[in-house]
Image 1 (cartoon, rainbow, N blue to C red):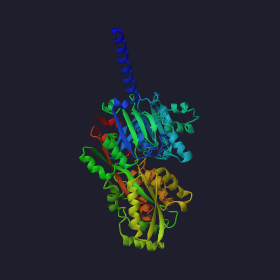
Image 2 (tube, one colour):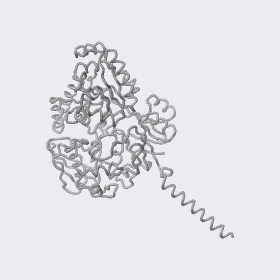
Image 3 (cartoon, one colour):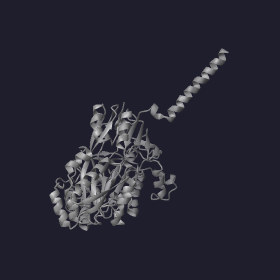
Image 4 (cartoon, rainbow, N blue to C red):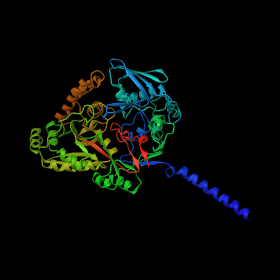
Length: 537
């Protein structure tokens, strides 16, 4: 009888141990270091060649470019390339690649992967205008000199070191994806579908374990990442959960309940209160700015003097406080503070009398009604819209507000090119950079080729010639290029095509059990947290 009881007892213990092991496998966060990061937008895609929007928050941890660049210190940091050189006129660049690197699927990283990845981003843009592959447009050929050396031959001089450190269209993926998807070539649409189903094939410190773009993305530590020894951070998280919480109040609730560790968009009024409760803050002065676009193809915003009337009816000092609670710098020119090409004193003076003068010069009879489109889940946009509605009413301009979610706003805004008389008169949208060049702001938002993001419907051949010349001049005479970028910004300012309202200072609030060092944050890679540097516990 005692032997039977002993056997039964052993069986019970084994079952219990097995159950605990199974539970541990299903819920790794119970035994592993986990960081939950609240992000405020739906993920729009994770194709490393094509994505040009919110998917950056995922791409930045899963994929790597050849180089990283920090504009704060004007320093480059080797990533998948360890050194790089160019000829005297900047038309040939040679990158020596890092050896001993593997992709998440086990494929060895080499020069072939670089050639395929960059050509795919460039060629998709050339064929369809999608993505940010325009940054490689000057590349006429990529030559494989050996397994770990690539040579870029350019049609005109360019700062390829800056381009290779871009936050979009510069990520390297595993060539095995082509065979795995049954694609006929790198441009096959099946590759994009495969990526956006939640699959990853990068070299980064984390890989995708679960992908729900409307809810959350779960990242798992990639133990074979080449950089762990260099980073030397045994406290790095084993899992990162990017939780989609679009409402600032939801982020606050998640943080205070302990369900979230890092928040990116709590109500700004609550920041001081959270700090008194022991939470930590990382204030990141970003290159993320908010642009008010005027529909230049629809009456009455197609009249320069009318646009100037609106511009002088706005008190940006007041708006920075009302909308951003001080967590921003007043905009000056389209290019943000501390970014290459920023210009001071391109700010409209708040003056209702002057605004009235411009309104009279415009010939627009009042009362007149205009429509204002803005993103519904950005509290700062709502405050701006309501404040501007009140200000313009004093001039006899009635503003009809049209709040929309981001995906709908993008579709409506692009309508300025197809049916401008049905597109809103005013649109507020935000921008953060692709490459550390003023061209990224000026081309993407105001060049007639860039119909995906030029919500003003702006067409000005002289402006476009200026910025295109500056872009080609960057590789030859950088200071002369910056002067042309200044002239281009002055044109936008004088014509009041788009107003940079403010450059955001982003307060990341986080649990005190976590440490976020400076290396984990880089304003060029907006919203990306380099979790390999984050310390847990």
